[in-house]
Amino acid sequence: MAAPSRSALFLSGLLAAAGTAHFVAPRGFDAIAPEALPGDPRRWTRLSGVAEVALAAGVAHPRTRRLAVAHPRTRRLAAGLTGAFFVAAFPANLQMAADWRNRSPVRRAVAYGRLPLQVPLVLWAESVRRGAGRAS
Image 1: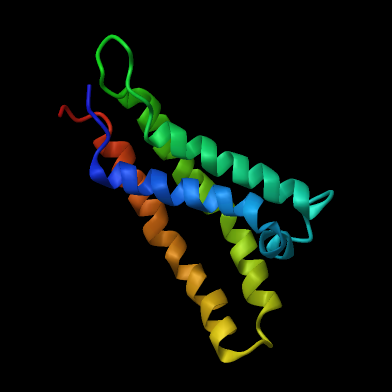
Image 2: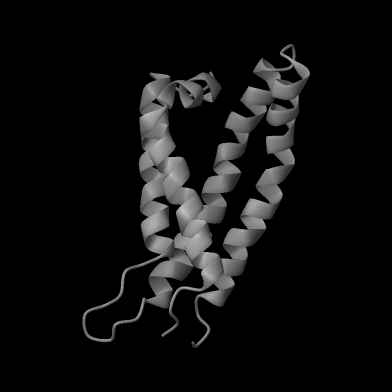
């Protein structure tokens, strides 16, 4: 079984940090929740934060007691779900870009800059997924 790669651990760290931010500073995430989602935006902020933390745990799955190595099937599944999560989060980035189109040039650059970043994030998750089955 393969231990988590450095790439998997960095992806896990990114997910954990982003997920934690949903609880530490939720207002910014509430503001970009697409209006088409039913219910309170804070609920979607919390759900996405929980999802990111859970995905982080799966990508950096803890060592098993018997073998002291991570389980690649768990990491493979979590990395695949991470890619899907990044795709599912894209509408929030579109909402942010639409909402910030009349803001300062710096804020517009941040909002518009997030859009193409989804592609490398999805590719990164896919790379971790593929690498999860390799022997260490």
